[in-house]
Amino acid sequence: MKPHPDRDTLTRFLLDRSGIRGVVVHLDQTWAEIAARTEYPPPVAARLGETCAAAALFTGHAKIDGRLSVQLRGTGALRTLFAECTAAGTLRGIAHFDHPLPSPLTPRAFGPGSLMAITIESTPPGAHEPTRYQGLVSLEADSLAEAFEAYFEQSEQLPTRLLLATVEGRTAGLMLQKLPGAKGDMDGWNRCNALFETLGGQELAELPVETLLHRLFHEERVKLLDRRPLAFACSCSRERVADMLRTLGADEARSAVVDGVAVVHCDFCGEGYRFETEQIEALFTFAPTAPSSDRLQ
Image (cartoon, rainbow, N blue to C red; front, side, top):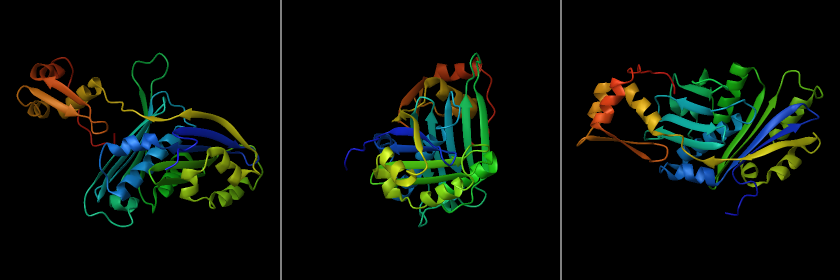
């Protein structure tokens, strides 16, 4: 596999003629490190890669001082897809599934009553606690791209197009959005939609950003706004693990102690956190027990 000219980057651009903004994401080494944490069947890996690309795309035009996460959850063979991208450009992701897996593996594999959540967690200047916004929609689509397009249509009232692809160890995504009140000719959105439909996943994953945008939109006056790097990193910490143990409750946390020590491993990166019996007890002596929750996290 040849090195990608735009390896592990997020690029924002504007189609000036039509008044449309866009984001392109390419994940090479970042995706390789996420995928290496767990051995996923190829269809599950492809869907997780697409979810990671989407999480990065959605940070392109959102004001985020913390992190944005995408979570899809259900009770079917595909139980969870989760990806998180921080303001610093770090990504992590994980999937949970059961065999047998249907073919093709689409969002309908989450089963009836499944949900998608996009959560933005930011800490405003001067604030001690982060603020949290979460949008929830039902998950009814034949592809992840269709599911995300429906989310923006329902929750944000933003006409949106997405193409997501995981090809030969690379993951990539392209997003277009038409904003209310944006300058541009009347037919711009329809024209760019038609051009968008000509792009395939292989081209998206392999072409350099400038080449890709020129081939698609050379008559739309493409303006590159900025580019920033992306990389794998986990946001786990001892403090976050301690909060998780408090959420479980004293009895369940104590049951994790074996030979005087509870060891909690992060599912995303494998890091282990050790809590001795006294430290487990201290979690519930000096802090109230957090209530358990069935909400998407």
